[in-house]
Image (cartoon, rainbow, N blue to C red; front, side, top):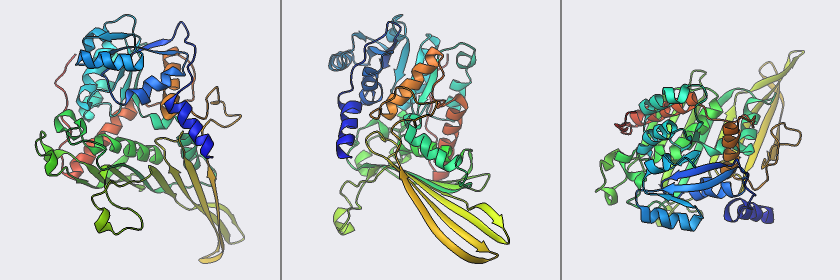
Length: 428
Protein backbone atom coordinates (compact mmCIF):
# COMPACT_ATOMS: atom_id res chain seq x y z
CA UNK A 1 0.00 0.00 0.00
CA UNK A 2 2.83 2.41 0.85
CA UNK A 3 4.65 1.60 -2.40
CA UNK A 4 1.45 2.19 -4.42
CA UNK A 5 0.92 5.55 -2.69
CA UNK A 6 4.51 6.61 -3.37
CA UNK A 7 4.11 5.63 -7.02
CA UNK A 8 0.94 7.70 -7.32
CA UNK A 9 2.67 10.70 -5.75
CA UNK A 10 5.71 10.33 -7.98
CA UNK A 11 3.85 9.82 -11.27
CA UNK A 12 0.96 12.14 -10.51
CA UNK A 13 2.75 15.05 -8.85
CA UNK A 14 6.55 14.86 -8.81
CA UNK A 15 7.39 13.49 -12.25
CA UNK A 16 4.39 12.87 -14.54
CA UNK A 17 5.26 10.74 -17.58
CA UNK A 18 5.44 12.96 -20.68
CA UNK A 19 3.00 12.30 -23.50
CA UNK A 20 3.76 12.88 -27.16
CA UNK A 21 1.82 16.00 -28.13
CA UNK A 22 -0.69 15.92 -30.94
CA UNK A 23 -0.69 18.57 -33.66
CA UNK A 24 -4.16 19.72 -32.58
CA UNK A 25 -3.25 20.01 -28.89
CA UNK A 26 -4.93 22.84 -26.95
CA UNK A 27 -2.37 25.56 -26.29
CA UNK A 28 -2.83 27.12 -22.86
CA UNK A 29 -1.73 30.55 -21.71
CA UNK A 30 -1.39 31.29 -18.00
CA UNK A 31 -2.61 34.60 -16.58
CA UNK A 32 -0.32 35.11 -13.63
CA UNK A 33 2.77 33.25 -12.43
CA UNK A 34 0.78 31.52 -9.71
CA UNK A 35 1.84 28.97 -7.13
CA UNK A 36 -1.13 26.73 -7.89
CA UNK A 37 -0.60 26.36 -11.67
CA UNK A 38 2.23 23.76 -11.44
CA UNK A 39 -0.08 21.43 -9.49
CA UNK A 40 -3.36 22.40 -11.15
CA UNK A 41 -2.36 22.56 -14.82
CA UNK A 42 1.35 22.53 -15.72
CA UNK A 43 1.97 19.11 -14.17
CA UNK A 44 -1.24 17.47 -15.45
CA UNK A 45 -0.58 18.85 -18.95
CA UNK A 46 2.72 16.95 -19.17
CA UNK A 47 0.91 13.61 -19.34
CA UNK A 48 -1.87 14.82 -21.66
CA UNK A 49 -1.23 14.45 -25.38
CA UNK A 50 -3.75 17.18 -26.23
CA UNK A 51 -2.51 19.95 -23.93
CA UNK A 52 0.51 22.24 -24.25
CA UNK A 53 1.41 25.02 -21.82
CA UNK A 54 2.47 27.57 -24.40
CA UNK A 55 2.59 30.99 -22.73
CA UNK A 56 2.48 33.04 -19.56
CA UNK A 57 2.00 36.67 -18.61
CA UNK A 58 2.43 38.33 -15.23
CA UNK A 59 2.36 41.92 -13.99
CA UNK A 60 6.10 41.61 -13.41
CA UNK A 61 7.67 40.42 -16.67
CA UNK A 62 10.94 39.49 -14.94
CA UNK A 63 9.00 37.17 -12.67
CA UNK A 64 7.12 35.75 -15.65
CA UNK A 65 10.41 35.06 -17.44
CA UNK A 66 11.83 33.24 -14.43
CA UNK A 67 8.58 31.26 -14.11
CA UNK A 68 8.65 30.35 -17.80
CA UNK A 69 12.24 29.17 -17.58
CA UNK A 70 11.49 27.02 -14.54
CA UNK A 71 8.46 25.39 -16.15
CA UNK A 72 9.66 25.23 -19.78
CA UNK A 73 7.03 27.65 -21.09
CA UNK A 74 8.16 29.00 -24.50
CA UNK A 75 6.25 32.30 -24.71
CA UNK A 76 6.32 35.20 -22.24
CA UNK A 77 4.09 38.21 -22.80
CA UNK A 78 4.51 41.63 -21.21
CA UNK A 79 0.82 42.07 -20.37
CA UNK A 80 -2.27 39.96 -19.80
CA UNK A 81 -3.91 41.55 -22.84
CA UNK A 82 -0.96 40.64 -25.06
CA UNK A 83 -1.41 37.00 -24.03
CA UNK A 84 -5.12 37.14 -24.86
CA UNK A 85 -4.41 38.57 -28.30
CA UNK A 86 -1.83 35.91 -29.15
CA UNK A 87 -3.38 33.86 -31.99
CA UNK A 88 -1.31 30.82 -31.04
CA UNK A 89 -3.10 30.55 -27.65
CA UNK A 90 -6.36 28.53 -27.53
CA UNK A 91 -7.22 28.56 -23.84
CA UNK A 92 -6.51 30.62 -20.74
CA UNK A 93 -5.95 29.46 -17.18
CA UNK A 94 -6.88 32.13 -14.63
CA UNK A 95 -5.41 31.86 -11.14
CA UNK A 96 -5.28 35.57 -10.36
CA UNK A 97 -6.50 37.12 -7.10
CA UNK A 98 -10.23 36.51 -6.66
CA UNK A 99 -11.25 40.09 -7.42
CA UNK A 100 -9.75 39.79 -10.93
CA UNK A 101 -11.53 36.59 -11.96
CA UNK A 102 -14.66 38.27 -13.34
CA UNK A 103 -12.81 40.81 -15.49
CA UNK A 104 -10.26 38.48 -17.01
CA UNK A 105 -12.70 35.65 -17.61
CA UNK A 106 -14.85 38.05 -19.63
CA UNK A 107 -11.83 39.47 -21.44
CA UNK A 108 -10.59 35.97 -22.27
CA UNK A 109 -13.94 34.79 -23.61
CA UNK A 110 -14.24 38.02 -25.60
CA UNK A 111 -10.85 37.23 -27.16
CA UNK A 112 -12.21 33.85 -28.26
CA UNK A 113 -10.26 31.78 -25.71
CA UNK A 114 -11.55 28.84 -23.69
CA UNK A 115 -11.22 29.48 -19.96
CA UNK A 116 -10.30 27.28 -17.01
CA UNK A 117 -11.16 29.56 -14.10
CA UNK A 118 -9.91 28.89 -10.59
CA UNK A 119 -12.50 28.85 -7.84
CA UNK A 120 -14.16 30.96 -6.63
CA UNK A 121 -15.44 32.02 -10.04
CA UNK A 122 -16.00 35.63 -8.92
CA UNK A 123 -15.90 37.90 -5.88
CA UNK A 124 -19.63 37.64 -5.18
CA UNK A 125 -22.95 36.38 -6.54
CA UNK A 126 -23.74 39.57 -8.49
CA UNK A 127 -20.53 39.15 -10.49
CA UNK A 128 -21.19 35.43 -10.99
CA UNK A 129 -24.65 36.15 -12.40
CA UNK A 130 -23.25 38.80 -14.72
CA UNK A 131 -20.44 36.52 -15.89
CA UNK A 132 -22.35 33.30 -16.47
CA UNK A 133 -25.42 34.95 -18.04
CA UNK A 134 -23.42 37.28 -20.29
CA UNK A 135 -24.19 36.88 -24.03
CA UNK A 136 -20.53 36.06 -24.59
CA UNK A 137 -21.08 32.96 -22.44
CA UNK A 138 -24.62 31.93 -23.35
CA UNK A 139 -24.52 32.24 -27.14
CA UNK A 140 -24.25 28.96 -29.07
CA UNK A 141 -20.75 27.96 -30.09
CA UNK A 142 -18.92 30.18 -27.60
CA UNK A 143 -15.68 29.09 -25.91
CA UNK A 144 -15.78 26.73 -22.94
CA UNK A 145 -15.79 28.24 -19.43
CA UNK A 146 -15.25 25.99 -16.40
CA UNK A 147 -14.97 26.87 -12.71
CA UNK A 148 -12.21 24.58 -11.47
CA UNK A 149 -13.70 22.53 -8.63
CA UNK A 150 -11.22 19.77 -9.39
CA UNK A 151 -12.20 17.33 -6.62
CA UNK A 152 -15.56 16.67 -8.31
CA UNK A 153 -13.94 15.05 -11.36
CA UNK A 154 -12.21 12.21 -9.49
CA UNK A 155 -13.84 8.75 -9.32
CA UNK A 156 -13.44 8.76 -5.53
CA UNK A 157 -15.82 11.70 -5.13
CA UNK A 158 -18.32 10.30 -7.61
CA UNK A 159 -18.23 6.90 -5.90
CA UNK A 160 -18.85 8.62 -2.55
CA UNK A 161 -21.89 10.41 -4.02
CA UNK A 162 -23.18 7.15 -5.51
CA UNK A 163 -23.20 5.50 -2.07
CA UNK A 164 -25.40 8.37 -0.88
CA UNK A 165 -27.73 8.92 -3.83
CA UNK A 166 -27.80 5.78 -5.97
CA UNK A 167 -27.66 2.69 -3.76
CA UNK A 168 -31.04 0.97 -3.10
CA UNK A 169 -30.27 0.89 0.64
CA UNK A 170 -29.57 4.63 0.85
CA UNK A 171 -32.18 6.86 2.43
CA UNK A 172 -32.43 10.63 2.12
CA UNK A 173 -29.65 12.85 3.45
CA UNK A 174 -30.28 13.78 7.09
CA UNK A 175 -27.04 15.37 8.30
CA UNK A 176 -23.74 16.13 6.59
CA UNK A 177 -20.42 17.75 7.39
CA UNK A 178 -17.41 18.84 5.36
CA UNK A 179 -14.12 20.02 6.83
CA UNK A 180 -10.76 21.25 5.58
CA UNK A 181 -7.84 22.62 7.55
CA UNK A 182 -4.48 24.23 6.85
CA UNK A 183 -1.86 24.42 9.62
CA UNK A 184 -1.16 27.79 11.21
CA UNK A 185 1.83 29.52 9.60
CA UNK A 186 1.52 28.00 6.12
CA UNK A 187 -0.10 31.20 4.85
CA UNK A 188 2.05 34.24 5.64
CA UNK A 189 0.70 37.44 7.16
CA UNK A 190 0.93 39.41 3.90
CA UNK A 191 -0.78 36.78 1.73
CA UNK A 192 -3.54 37.90 -0.65
CA UNK A 193 -5.95 35.54 1.11
CA UNK A 194 -6.05 38.05 3.97
CA UNK A 195 -6.92 40.99 1.68
CA UNK A 196 -10.56 42.08 1.79
CA UNK A 197 -10.08 44.33 -1.24
CA UNK A 198 -8.89 41.29 -3.22
CA UNK A 199 -11.95 39.25 -2.12
CA UNK A 200 -10.00 37.14 0.34
CA UNK A 201 -11.00 35.11 3.39
CA UNK A 202 -11.30 31.48 4.45
CA UNK A 203 -14.81 31.19 3.02
CA UNK A 204 -13.44 32.26 -0.38
CA UNK A 205 -10.70 29.63 -0.18
CA UNK A 206 -11.22 26.33 1.65
CA UNK A 207 -14.79 27.39 2.36
CA UNK A 208 -15.68 27.23 -1.32
CA UNK A 209 -14.69 23.56 -1.36
CA UNK A 210 -16.55 22.58 1.80
CA UNK A 211 -19.67 24.45 0.67
CA UNK A 212 -19.48 22.85 -2.78
CA UNK A 213 -19.19 19.44 -1.11
CA UNK A 214 -22.33 20.04 0.95
CA UNK A 215 -24.27 21.23 -2.09
CA UNK A 216 -23.27 18.07 -3.96
CA UNK A 217 -24.27 15.92 -0.99
CA UNK A 218 -27.63 17.68 -0.58
CA UNK A 219 -28.37 17.41 -4.31
CA UNK A 220 -30.41 20.59 -3.78
CA UNK A 221 -29.64 24.13 -2.72
CA UNK A 222 -29.67 25.10 0.96
CA UNK A 223 -32.61 27.40 1.68
CA UNK A 224 -31.27 28.84 4.92
CA UNK A 225 -27.98 29.53 6.68
CA UNK A 226 -28.84 28.51 10.24
CA UNK A 227 -25.57 29.63 11.76
CA UNK A 228 -22.25 31.14 10.68
CA UNK A 229 -19.34 32.28 12.80
CA UNK A 230 -15.76 33.20 12.02
CA UNK A 231 -12.36 33.68 13.61
CA UNK A 232 -10.73 36.94 12.60
CA UNK A 233 -7.14 37.75 11.80
CA UNK A 234 -5.84 39.35 14.95
CA UNK A 235 -3.20 42.05 15.43
CA UNK A 236 -0.41 40.76 13.11
CA UNK A 237 -2.61 41.65 10.14
CA UNK A 238 -3.81 45.05 11.35
CA UNK A 239 -2.09 46.95 8.49
CA UNK A 240 -4.17 45.21 5.80
CA UNK A 241 -7.28 46.85 4.26
CA UNK A 242 -10.33 46.23 6.47
CA UNK A 243 -8.75 43.37 8.44
CA UNK A 244 -11.87 43.10 10.62
CA UNK A 245 -13.78 41.84 7.56
CA UNK A 246 -11.49 38.87 6.91
CA UNK A 247 -12.26 35.39 8.17
CA UNK A 248 -9.25 33.25 9.00
CA UNK A 249 -11.66 30.40 9.72
CA UNK A 250 -15.37 29.92 9.07
CA UNK A 251 -17.96 27.59 10.55
CA UNK A 252 -21.49 27.46 9.11
CA UNK A 253 -24.60 25.29 9.19
CA UNK A 254 -27.18 25.08 6.40
CA UNK A 255 -30.66 23.62 5.99
CA UNK A 256 -32.46 22.50 2.83
CA UNK A 257 -36.16 22.61 2.02
CA UNK A 258 -36.32 18.88 2.83
CA UNK A 259 -34.94 19.51 6.31
CA UNK A 260 -31.43 18.15 5.78
CA UNK A 261 -28.68 20.01 7.63
CA UNK A 262 -25.01 20.37 6.77
CA UNK A 263 -22.07 21.93 8.58
CA UNK A 264 -18.80 23.17 7.13
CA UNK A 265 -15.51 23.91 8.83
CA UNK A 266 -12.88 25.82 6.87
CA UNK A 267 -9.72 26.94 8.66
CA UNK A 268 -6.63 28.43 6.98
CA UNK A 269 -4.60 28.63 10.20
CA UNK A 270 -5.61 25.81 12.51
CA UNK A 271 -3.59 25.41 15.71
CA UNK A 272 -3.40 23.06 18.68
CA UNK A 273 -5.14 19.73 19.05
CA UNK A 274 -2.00 17.63 19.39
CA UNK A 275 -2.71 14.15 20.77
CA UNK A 276 -1.25 13.06 24.12
CA UNK A 277 -0.19 16.62 25.01
CA UNK A 278 -2.00 19.19 27.18
CA UNK A 279 -3.89 21.75 25.09
CA UNK A 280 -2.19 24.59 26.99
CA UNK A 281 1.15 23.43 25.56
CA UNK A 282 0.06 23.16 21.93
CA UNK A 283 -2.58 25.85 21.43
CA UNK A 284 -0.14 28.06 19.50
CA UNK A 285 1.44 25.18 17.54
CA UNK A 286 0.28 24.41 13.98
CA UNK A 287 -2.64 21.98 13.99
CA UNK A 288 -3.56 19.24 11.56
CA UNK A 289 -6.64 17.49 10.24
CA UNK A 290 -7.66 15.34 7.30
CA UNK A 291 -10.08 16.74 4.72
CA UNK A 292 -13.25 14.81 5.45
CA UNK A 293 -16.89 14.59 4.36
CA UNK A 294 -19.40 12.64 6.46
CA UNK A 295 -23.06 11.96 5.72
CA UNK A 296 -25.81 10.43 7.84
CA UNK A 297 -28.84 9.22 5.90
CA UNK A 298 -32.40 8.73 7.10
CA UNK A 299 -33.50 5.21 7.91
CA UNK A 300 -34.97 3.44 4.89
CA UNK A 301 -37.46 0.57 4.99
CA UNK A 302 -36.21 -2.33 2.87
CA UNK A 303 -38.98 -4.86 3.60
CA UNK A 304 -42.33 -4.92 5.35
CA UNK A 305 -43.91 -8.31 6.04
CA UNK A 306 -46.23 -9.96 8.61
CA UNK A 307 -46.15 -6.97 10.93
CA UNK A 308 -42.36 -6.74 10.86
CA UNK A 309 -40.22 -4.07 9.25
CA UNK A 310 -36.64 -4.39 8.07
CA UNK A 311 -34.98 -0.94 7.89
CA UNK A 312 -31.43 0.28 7.33
CA UNK A 313 -29.70 3.52 8.27
CA UNK A 314 -26.49 4.40 6.42
CA UNK A 315 -23.46 6.55 7.27
CA UNK A 316 -20.82 7.34 4.62
CA UNK A 317 -17.45 9.01 5.16
CA UNK A 318 -14.90 10.08 2.55
CA UNK A 319 -11.40 10.81 3.81
CA UNK A 320 -9.15 13.14 1.80
CA UNK A 321 -11.44 14.21 -1.03
CA UNK A 322 -9.04 17.01 -2.07
CA UNK A 323 -6.08 14.75 -2.87
CA UNK A 324 -7.55 11.27 -3.28
CA UNK A 325 -4.81 10.16 -5.68
CA UNK A 326 -2.35 10.28 -2.76
CA UNK A 327 -4.68 8.29 -0.53
CA UNK A 328 -8.39 8.17 0.23
CA UNK A 329 -10.93 5.89 1.83
CA UNK A 330 -14.70 5.64 1.64
CA UNK A 331 -16.29 4.12 4.77
CA UNK A 332 -19.84 2.80 4.42
CA UNK A 333 -21.69 1.59 7.53
CA UNK A 334 -25.25 0.24 7.40
CA UNK A 335 -27.17 -0.30 10.63
CA UNK A 336 -29.95 -2.85 10.04
CA UNK A 337 -32.96 -3.09 12.35
CA UNK A 338 -35.92 -5.47 12.37
CA UNK A 339 -38.93 -4.22 14.32
CA UNK A 340 -42.29 -5.65 15.25
CA UNK A 341 -44.34 -2.57 16.01
CA UNK A 342 -42.27 -0.51 18.46
CA UNK A 343 -40.21 -3.49 19.57
CA UNK A 344 -36.70 -4.07 18.18
CA UNK A 345 -36.42 -7.73 17.26
CA UNK A 346 -32.87 -7.66 15.90
CA UNK A 347 -30.17 -5.17 14.97
CA UNK A 348 -26.77 -5.53 13.34
CA UNK A 349 -24.15 -3.50 11.45
CA UNK A 350 -22.58 -4.13 8.07
CA UNK A 351 -19.62 -2.01 7.03
CA UNK A 352 -17.06 -1.93 4.28
CA UNK A 353 -14.37 0.34 2.88
CA UNK A 354 -13.81 1.35 -0.73
CA UNK A 355 -11.21 3.09 -2.84
CA UNK A 356 -11.74 4.43 -6.35
CA UNK A 357 -8.59 5.61 -8.12
CA UNK A 358 -10.13 4.77 -11.52
CA UNK A 359 -13.63 4.29 -12.89
CA UNK A 360 -14.85 0.71 -12.26
CA UNK A 361 -14.25 -2.04 -14.81
CA UNK A 362 -17.22 -2.12 -17.17
CA UNK A 363 -18.21 1.46 -16.38
CA UNK A 364 -18.71 3.43 -19.63
CA UNK A 365 -16.67 6.26 -18.09
CA UNK A 366 -13.60 4.03 -17.92
CA UNK A 367 -11.06 4.95 -20.57
CA UNK A 368 -7.30 5.31 -20.38
CA UNK A 369 -7.08 6.88 -16.91
CA UNK A 370 -4.33 5.81 -14.52
CA UNK A 371 -4.39 5.31 -10.75
CA UNK A 372 -1.90 8.16 -10.34
CA UNK A 373 -4.13 10.70 -12.07
CA UNK A 374 -4.79 13.56 -9.69
CA UNK A 375 -8.10 15.38 -9.38
CA UNK A 376 -6.57 18.09 -11.59
CA UNK A 377 -5.64 15.54 -14.25
CA UNK A 378 -9.19 14.20 -14.31
CA UNK A 379 -10.48 17.77 -14.51
CA UNK A 380 -8.17 18.57 -17.43
CA UNK A 381 -9.39 15.46 -19.24
CA UNK A 382 -12.99 16.68 -19.05
CA UNK A 383 -12.03 20.21 -20.07
CA UNK A 384 -10.34 18.85 -23.19
CA UNK A 385 -13.31 16.58 -23.91
CA UNK A 386 -15.66 19.57 -23.74
CA UNK A 387 -13.45 21.71 -25.99
CA UNK A 388 -13.13 18.86 -28.50
CA UNK A 389 -16.87 18.15 -28.41
CA UNK A 390 -16.45 14.63 -27.05
CA UNK A 391 -18.53 12.70 -24.55
CA UNK A 392 -16.58 12.34 -21.32
CA UNK A 393 -17.45 11.20 -17.82
CA UNK A 394 -20.44 13.53 -17.60
CA UNK A 395 -18.95 15.40 -14.63
CA UNK A 396 -19.09 19.16 -15.09
CA UNK A 397 -19.65 22.44 -13.24
CA UNK A 398 -22.26 24.36 -15.21
CA UNK A 399 -23.16 28.06 -15.12
CA UNK A 400 -26.15 27.69 -12.82
CA UNK A 401 -24.06 25.69 -10.37
CA UNK A 402 -21.38 28.39 -10.25
CA UNK A 403 -23.97 31.13 -9.69
CA UNK A 404 -25.71 29.26 -6.86
CA UNK A 405 -22.36 28.51 -5.27
CA UNK A 406 -21.56 32.22 -4.96
CA UNK A 407 -25.08 33.01 -3.74
CA UNK A 408 -24.54 30.59 -0.86
CA UNK A 409 -21.09 32.08 -0.13
CA UNK A 410 -22.60 35.58 0.08
CA UNK A 411 -25.37 34.41 2.42
CA UNK A 412 -22.78 32.77 4.67
CA UNK A 413 -20.86 36.02 4.99
CA UNK A 414 -24.05 37.93 5.76
CA UNK A 415 -25.05 35.43 8.44
CA UNK A 416 -21.58 35.71 10.00
CA UNK A 417 -21.95 39.50 10.18
CA UNK A 418 -19.30 40.16 7.53
CA UNK A 419 -19.52 42.10 4.30
CA UNK A 420 -19.96 40.35 0.97
CA UNK A 421 -16.61 40.44 -0.85
CA UNK A 422 -16.20 43.56 -3.05
CA UNK A 423 -16.52 43.13 -6.81
CA UNK A 424 -14.91 44.72 -9.83
CA UNK A 425 -15.96 47.89 -11.65
CA UNK A 426 -15.06 46.30 -14.98
CA UNK A 427 -17.66 46.42 -17.74
CA UNK A 428 -17.36 44.93 -21.20
